[in-house]
Image (cartoon, rainbow, N blue to C red; front, side, top):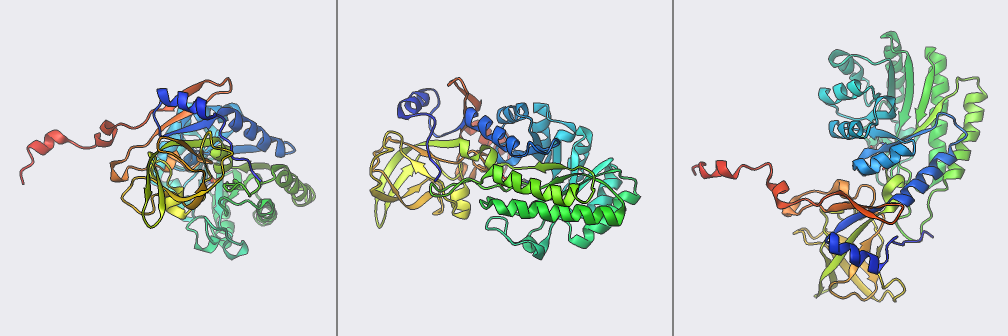
Amino acid sequence: MSEKKCPLNREQLEALTQRFPTPFHLYDEKGIRENARRLKAAFAWNPGFKEYFAVKAAPNPYLMKILKSEGFGADCSSYGELLLSEQVGVVGENIIFTSNDTPVYEFAKARELGAIINLDDITHIQYLEDHVGLPELVCCRYNPGPLKGGNAIIGHPEEAKYGFTRPQLFEGYRILRDKGVKRFGLHTMVASNELDGAYFIDTAKLLFDLVGELSAELGIEFEFVNLGGGIGIPYRPEQEAVDLDAVGEGIRKLYEELIVGKGIKPLDIRLECGRMVTGPFGYLVSRVLHKKHTYKQYVGLDACMANLMRPGMYGAYHHITVPGKENAPLDLVCDVTGSLCENNDKFAIDRAIPQVEIGDLVVIHDAGAHGHSMGFNYNAKLRSAELLLREDGEVVQIRRAETIEDYFATLDFDGLKGFEV
Ligand SMILES: *Cc1c(COP(=O)(O)O)cnc(C)c1O
């Protein structure tokens, strides 16, 4: 069981809405920090362990600064994410640039910042060399294809667009070695929102074995293996969080056997998780705008898919609570909707919630990763503000809500006047 509790109660949230109208995303700094420390503790046995926070999960510089202070780096996959990291002072090898289908200007920015470049394809070796030059350290992304079972969000590895095949990996590192690259890393990312800790231990085995084979065949040494992100979170209250200590310990045992035991040079373990770092510590706070009874019961919120698209996009479950009614019976079965002209703009379908009244606050849980960041402007809807609950109880705004001026910023209405039709 995972408890679904907002750190602010109804009175506190109501008071907050006097300053910041709903909807808004609220993040809990204390929760994020404690969780970051749990992750580090699970891998404390590996002196070079480092988590590179997947920026796309919550690309907010305030959150990134908190994570930097916990010793996390940044996993970036675009120019904009690289700039965000630079703003926060996360630069050099504290960045891993894991991109795909990458344009030159993004590789150039990654090079300029001294980021670790993680190549997605064997042809990118030449592309990188031709356009920005090869760095001293290069990492390659492995796609194990049929050697690894799939998982619901990312699908089967053979269907995934990412990474090198196994033969390409041997060929790729050989080319890199012959071109004078001196330092090497190995990466894979084969799961998303995976709650089975054993999956990550298996992934580590896959990479440790490969490091052994690649080192032996090519005479190169690896500095790190990056197991990717993808550690899941218990979106449903009946689910359990991944036991990080058990994963860390399982990986340690394999490390002893497959790295230390085989006399391979010590490796740093690296992760690039996003979801499990901030996901459970972000809440979308909204208000009931309408109740509707037709063929079904509907509860319409002032938030919509523009604020959180996971339920609409892949039917993802997000738990919903009604502050002040935590102990009320769940006797209203309804669809909880947003206002987009899209019938999949629903935060929940046939969900049992307490009887709500128009004006009640509603909290949508586990919105701290791939939540605000997936927001979009369809139907001219605007993205909401992001607020941070500091450890001392103060709430600060870390991103304002979009205004209609933001939405129109790319249009030229003056030009329209001279536009003859
Ligand atoms: C999305 C992504 C991550 C983070 O995934 P989470 O599920 O948020 O942990 C890490 N690495 C890469 C390459 C990704 O695409």
